[in-house]
Image (cartoon, rainbow, N blue to C red; front, side):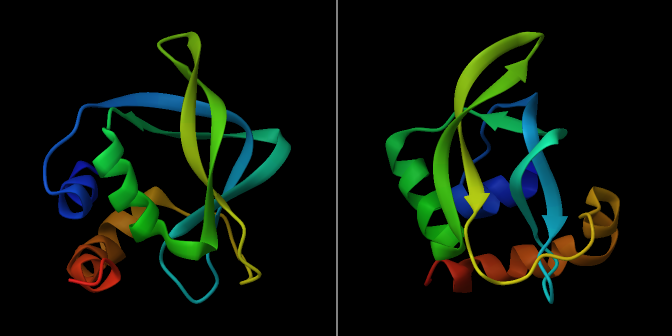
Length: 122
């Protein structure tokens, strides 16, 4: 969702396009500031589709960790459906209220970006 987070994780800026993932809902991870998406047929999630190579995808897999499973999904971009990879929540850790992009940006993004090297084992 945030170019500055992608750059901190991958090490460079990537092309990002607005996308919609139908059949999923985004929640806040309990006792965390970050989001998780889970299947919910009556919902949809707005996000970003990024163009990434295999090495970048390996870095993202490491960053997302074992709490998420990368799955092939269909997203809508510019009114057209296309395949993409999404990180779906698989952890037993509880999810709480709906995650707020605005709240994350205002209160948590700086600390989150600062934690990225540690999360990547650097």
